[in-house]
Each structure stands twice: as structure tokens, then as C-alpha cells.
Amino acid sequence: MKKHIKNIFFCAIIIFLIPKFTISSKAQDFSFDKAYQDYQHNLTQYQKAFSEYDYAKNAYIMNSTLNLKDDVRLKMLDLLTTRDELIRVYLTMLRMRIVENNGLTNDEKNSIFLKIDKEIEFYNNDKTKYSTNDSLTTLFSRNEELENRYKFETHKIIKEVIAYVSLGEEISLRLNHEQIYTNLRLLIDSRFSSNELVRTQFGHWFNDIDATIQIITQNEKEVRQEIDKIELNSQSKDVTCEPCNEILSYSIVSLSQYNGFLTEMINFIKNQP
Amino acid sequence: MIEQNINQTSANSIAKEESEKNQKINFIIVLRQKLNNLITIHVKNIFNKFRSNKKIFFPVSIVLGLLLLTIVVGLMFGIKDNSTQTIETPLPTFIASPTPQATQQINATTAIENELKTLKLKIKEFDVEQNKIKPPEINFKISF
Image (cartoon, rainbow over all chains, first blue to last red; front, side, top):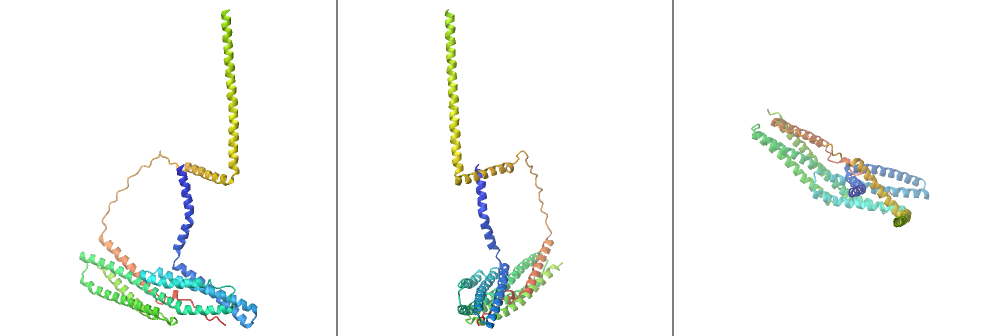
């Protein structure tokens, strides 16, 4: 009897837990790819809202009736809320890109999250402030406010985050190569101990590889300095990632060289009798 | 004469005993009938009250039904046949044969080689400008 009561109790617990489990698994499923899909969907929605607004605006300019004016007002209201949502979703996508980045430290990620979350919250709140009774004049002034916010705050943060994404991905590639380099050195050491290889062959090779790594890490420091400049720049509209991209392009060349050196070494070991 | 008297008294006493027995039996039968009537009426009353109170009747009957179902299911699938015992066959002893060192090294080198090939591809595909995540083109010039 007690066993059956326990069984019923157990079944009841499972029934109550299933929805909670599915909710938590859904939350875990949210990834950059999912966020990117959301962004693409919202971008289409925004483009649609913009073309509808543009059409209504032109119709009103051609024939300034009260009915057409009200139609423009409603289309503009839709455009502004869709635009807020688009920026919010775009920023969320960038956030997910940072979450999945393996090259950045936790401190770096947290400082980025602080900035990006503030912006996400702003756009999330902003879209709720619109009312269906808002006049065209109110909507125009709100558009101006948003334009300033985007150009002087959001744009700067976006550029900073994109620069961090590139830097993080480059660091991740370097770290992967360093792991291979460590394994390769262990393999070579084991060959030395069994007298299958001569140590002098590798001395210069190791030096060249270490020099390449130094160039790459130096470039990473310079990119960080450039990112700091973006943050300090008060004129957000002039912010550009160009200096960061230029330095990272050199790093990519060095990484390619690093990869070539390691491939050459492994081929050399493989071809040893 | 004396014998006749004795026979008569004995016959009287037997008749008395029989009548007493009959009385007792009749009393028990009546008592049983009354008790039966009382019990059936009371049980019926309680059951009717239970049925009429739907707030109690449905949950209790559902729980009892579930219990019955679990008992039936338990009886059908829960009882294990203890008569058939599985005889554990001893697992074959694993003898580790020393693998040649050369193959280990070949495996290590090919693994590294493959990883390097994958990384080379990633370097080739690396987009410094991050065009996939570039900001959307937003037109703020919507006033007229």
C-alpha cells in the first residue's frame, strides 16, 4: 500500500516538474544562431514597416487629408516601435556573440555586458512608452531623441562590441594553436628521449615560432588600446573600428604563418624514419 | 403405578425443555432480523450521504480508482518471476596487449595535423570586419 502511495506521489512530482524542465531547457537552447535568426526576422519586419510608412507619407504629401495624416501617424508609430525592437534584438544578438566567445576573459565579458545590457534595457523600455494617441509632432520629437541616443551612445557601444568580438575570435585561434604547440613540443621531447630526433634541429624553429607568438600578443595589446580609445571618444558618430581591424589583419597573417610553421614541424616529424 | 408416575414426570420435563429451546431459537432469529435491518439501513444511509456530497465523493473515488489501477498494473508487470534465476556467466578476462609506440605517435601526429588543417580553414574564413553582425541600416530621417 505504502509503495503505491509512493508511486502516485512520484508520478505527481514528475507531472509537476515536466513543464519546469521544458522551460529551463528552452532557456538553455538560446544561442547566437537563434539570436541571429530573431534579428533577421526583425530586420525584415522593420524594412516592411519603413516601406509602409514611406508609402503612407508620400500619399499624404500628395493629398493632405485628415484621414491620410492619421494613417501616416499610425504607420510612424508602428515604425518607431519596430525600430526599437530591431535595435534591442540586434544588441541581444551581439551579446550572445560575446557569450559564445572563447578568447575573451570573464572580466572583459562582464564589462561589455554592463554596457550592452543598459542599452538593451533602454530600448526595451522605450518601445513601451509609445501611445496610440501620440500626435505626429510627439512622434517626430521622439524620433529625434532616439536618433541622438543611437548616434551618441548605442553606435559607440556597437562598434566597441564588434571590435571585442574580432579580438576574442583571434585570441581563441591563437590559444588553439598554442595548445597544439604545447602538444607538439611534448611529442618532440618524447622523441628526443628515445633518440629518434636531434635537439639542435628544433632550436631555431622554436625561436621563430615564439617570435611569431610575441608579435600576435603585442598586436592584441594594441587592439585593446584602440578599443579603449573608442570608449573614450565622445563623438560617437565618428567612431570606427578601422584601426582595430588593421592591426587584427596583421595578426591574421601572423597566425597563418604560425599555422604553417606547426604544419611544417609535424610533417618533418612524420617523415622521420 | 409408581413406574407410570415416573414416566409421566419425565415426559413432562422433556416437553418443557423442548418448549424452552424453541423459545430461545425464536428469540435469536428475531434478534438477528432486527440487527440485519438496522445495519443495512445505517450502511445505506452512510453511502447515500457519501454519494450526495460530491466534493468528497469524486476525489475519494478517483484516488481509490488510481490506487486500484496501480495495484492491477503492479500485479501485471511488477511481480518478478523468482523461479528463473539468471546464471551469471563470467566475463572474459581482458588481456591488455602492449600497442606499439610507433602507432601511438602516428595517431598523435595525424590528430595534430587534422587540428591544424581545421584551424587553417578558420583563419582563412576569419572576417576581421565581422560583416555578419554589422549594425542594421537605420534611417532616422523620417520627418517631413
